[in-house]
Length: 66
Image 1 (tube, rainbow, N blue to C red):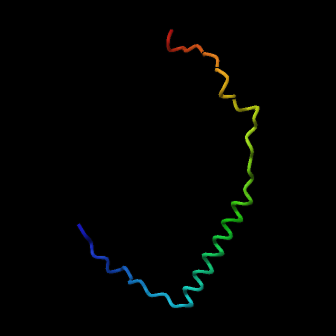
Image 2: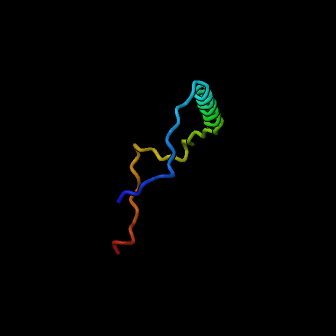
């Protein structure tokens, strides 16, 4: 069932000035995002916490078998 949308406005065409402002705002938003990402702390994984994959892991007893 389709409902008519009388409240929907037609899209207005952008003027050259609007396009320049939009492009500048987009560039500023992109720079801000890059700065936020660059400011995030990057933690390197501790090698002591990661088990080596070459070593076999010991078998564990399962309580489901009993």
